[in-house]
Image 1: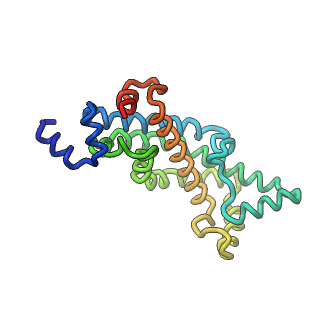
Image 2: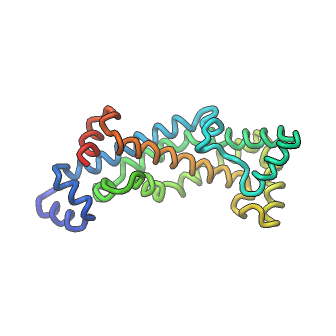
Image 3: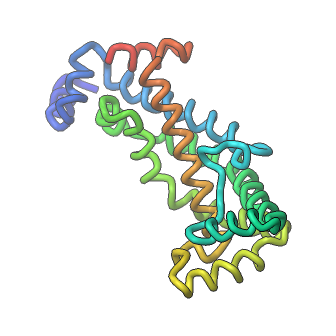
Length: 225
């Protein structure tokens, strides 16, 4: 990139990003650091969630029944009728765990195609700025990718009919959001919430302790901030 174009680009960037470039980071460094941070977070999140108990055993992302159905489930458990509730919750989480691994190729491709301009703008953003930008770009295509996997898993585990019947009644009474009345859509949404939450957690760790990552590019880019 020639000097004139570089100056024009800097003029369009947010002040924080200009400061990063002025501090000695090249445009390639900044973009590369953001890409590396996101890819590291995505791979870690997929690996952690896309396995047995990845959702079910993690309180941060465990999928519970929605809205007032969850309160009703607690009441059932208190009266000794919690086995079916536990089976349903377990099945929902297993479906999410089965869906997540399919996200990796799409996530990695999207990260690697991120522009230099995007990388520079996000470098000095908040703790999870890159993840939230990335979520805006990938959540919709990931939802389309997850839905058939979740649908197949819930059908195999025989939970769809039971959940949809209960949640459908709950939605009719205003106890459950309309979009949560379908188990496939509900689990897909919660699986994506959990995935991006875990990516954001990884981004925060990198920004807080880039040296601890052992990555030269992350140390150079985030360590200087």
